[in-house]
Length: 337
Image 1: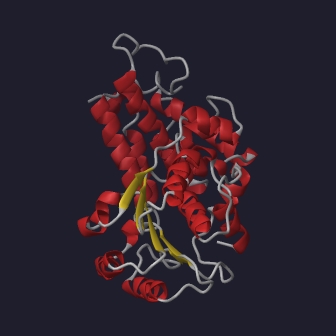
Image 2: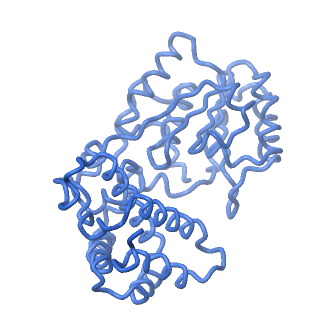
């Protein structure tokens, strides 16, 4: 994360985060802001932006009402997860180290030591740990002492996509702020795209990933995904050939798109009127008619398989074979269960 990106995330705020930021700011002004906060919610909604904006406010380097963070700046700022060399000396950032998925005990020990000292500028100190569930068991236990005996004017902000994975002793020592995702209408307005835009089928209610997709070549790819997948569901396209195409192009994006479509289809099954199965509801998933023969259970099974495959990318598995097996499950003659 460059210094410019850090500045953007500290001094600007995604519009849908104004309400939770306002609650934190009101608690700060009333001197009711606890020393440890667990900021939780689904990925892609800007929880790191919220934590950094609050940290900057605590350190006195941000406005009470930060201006809006636009999609182009958000996309650029969220690309990296590394600590810039030149940043506020009393702002401490803890991310998984490059090429790692966990936060180790040495990182937490260094953080605890830094927080035990007097602030460089004589005021508050703030630390952001993201994602907090990436801490190893040893790292989480090392953090407990800092949570139990916080130094004066010290604030710990734990950002978590999966708070249930944290130790109960960690959660019990934090005030919790659950951040809700924005509505699809809010996402569309922020991205500057109309309802039904192909980017929204992937972004859903997680706008930050969507911001990185407002590019002509990616939009064309998403449009082609929908067309070819509909042909697959109607048994007009060979799953092996489609698997080969996805592997050669952008498999990660294709799987994310498919997961988003499946999640939308499942939501639609639970909200649709009983007699609306035959046609696509207005504003609904255009693939509804293509895979309406699949039961809800079958949709959940395909969703689980797509998520597992996405998680295992780069692990050495035969990706094309696994993808072919997944896509075969959408063909009409094999999709009923």
